[in-house]
Image 1: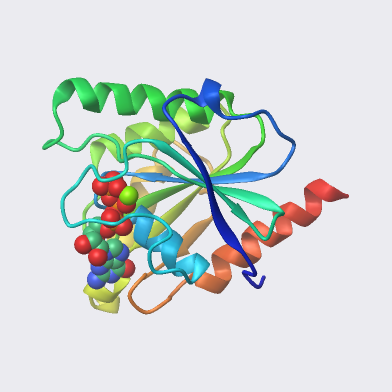
Image 2: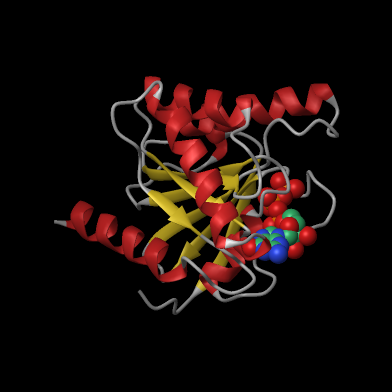
Length: 200
Ligand code: GTP
Ligand code: MG
């Protein structure tokens, strides 16, 4: 898929404020600092579409973008980061879960996971919750430029083993780096295929 246009639509504090629409929507979620906004910018080939930061908690709202006047992309706040005040963390978690649960045009939630880390309890718990609630999601490993392929494979294997303790099959998995555009075509093809299937 070529990205011909990518425009900021609006920010919302609550899923209830997001306008109802049949337009397919895809959202990016994950722990704070995992690289959501960077990945969105890489996919869209826009340096500053989504705001990025070294300090966690940059994205605090549901940020919606219109892509090719054909589908919506959403940047969500990070969940469960220890350095964000507990009260705010709780608000983010509620915001994200409500959005995931009730946004009817949400086609896929991309759950970002830092490829350098061992499986994290809150990521696993979140994905379990998604599965229990039948919310379609894919796993996206980020920042793969930061580790060797053997370390990456080791971490991926570890993650898969953890997931398979509770699941019969794994969701779709994407390997990405916003630094060197790894995974861009895979994710855009995936989105394009879903868009085609809903238009039939
Ligand atoms: P919040 O909005 O705070 O939840 O963070 P986020 O998940 O949107 O992360 P963001 O994209 O702001 O990136 C956080 C930091 O990680 C920034 O310093 C990025 O430059 C860095 N980063 C993101 N993706 C990559 C990547 O693929 N490779 C490398 N080396 N660094 C990355
Ligand atoms: Mg962000």
